[in-house]
Image (tube, rainbow, N blue to C red):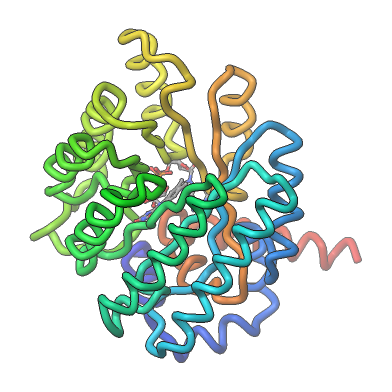
Length: 307
Ligand SMILES: Cc1cc2nc3c(=O)[nH]c(=O)nc-3n(C[C@H](O)[C@H](O)[C@H](O)COP(=O)(O)OP(=O)(O)OC[C@H]3O[C@@H](n4cnc5c(N)ncnc54)[C@H](O)[C@@H]3O)c2cc1C
């Protein structure tokens, strides 16, 4: 119920303007977002790298409705790649196709994504295309699979809550496309996605196994202890070394687990969002764990009392 409410709110643009200006929600957002500027993200990644994690930079933004905004988002990603190269950061980039104008025109989106992937290739780097709601799944996969034939330095995200995902994994494995497996963060109808968490988790485990056995450098992206343990067990049982896959987690979530995995010798990449367009991202993080809201309210009250 709460999950659905937060996901509903994530689309309310009017509310976005109001919420973004509130101190309470801004403090909550900065638990999950590195800051407003590329500079803030670079600082966060430098620190993560120093401590052993790699990163994926996400310049927040989605569902842009003007070509100018899509072009400007592409320029921001190109700037991020230049900065990664000059600062020698261990980081790649994650992009959303609706940020690159997919809602405006597929041609525009393809043009901008190609520019980003081309530049990443010249810099010997990699672009991960995030997966958005099911309305975009087929278009995203079609675009990535086509682009990957020319530029193998791009990969995609697949969501275990969708019924179709095992079939999609077969295709991506056959084409050696790098996949990040996630549970899925959008509000989907029962016609396309498992409504029950137990089914999503069970599918995640099976899909993780397929990716570990037959995928190309897969990323297992979850904070779920049980699924992380299942991944480690499966890899050990099939003699798949920690150099053949990586774990991925979100900035600010389960740092204890990120730390533990690193100490155990696994590769861990942290997804680092930055920028001012954090409202829908924050709503999805609240949908995953509504207790986040309580947590921050309590800590603000504590801060105020201490002041
Ligand atoms: C690197 C990365 C990239 C992602 N990219 C995409 C994408 O492209 N498309 C997409 O649809 N989804 C994406 N997601 C989000 C994903 O789909 C899930 O919504 C999210 O990871 C929460 O699910 P979980 O696997 O952690 O499991 P859950 O069962 O939701 O959570 C397991 C445990 O993790 C902790 N936890 C989970 N979420 C939170 C939170 N928000 N705040 C605090 N603690 C939390 C809690 O301790 C919880 O008990 C991404 C996730 C990661 C880690």
